[in-house]
Image (tube, rainbow, N blue to C red; front, side, top):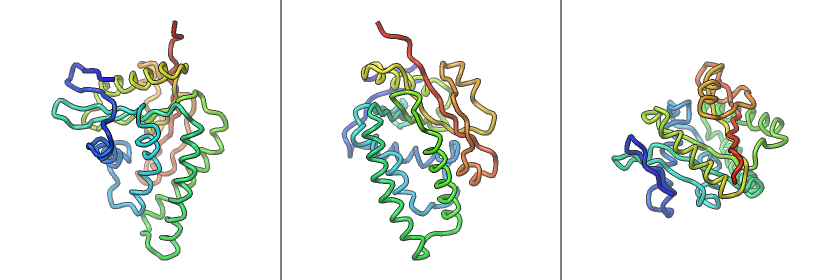
Length: 228
């Protein structure tokens, strides 16, 4: 799938591993970790955390992913799509267990700095909260959509949203859900204008603690019109 936007951005599927897309997605993930900004200092365990967050979508779920590429050839956004919740959840449980064991090893051998320790403590709290609240997923497909700060005019995000919706249609599903972070009280109305509904809002302890301002995690849903 490839589509061209008015600002010269192309949305396309991922190239084979080793041809640059994986590295570009990882770099964009790192660069936007804190509401569009990178961590202010190196984070202990960052590579392992990135693998837990991205690895399934760049592996088993690769065929459903896409990137937005600028006219200059830079990856300025990505959409990572999961049409098999059970398989992805099993993969994450396994990799998260491995990551947790490695981080505990760092902790007991005093190889983790105080700032990283605070980050991981808050992140653990968020994971526990998510597991308690996510008794039933709101849609059978979920996605992660991310756009570089310099490309957040809306056009790129809309094209990536349409890619996600196309993968839902191909899988015969009625819509998709995702999670996004926003300053407390922001974004819900803007999302409604592009057909995305906010169905839940909870405090993101990790980002709130790191940034020093209240940050919410929004659960969002995009419902597709019935297909003929």
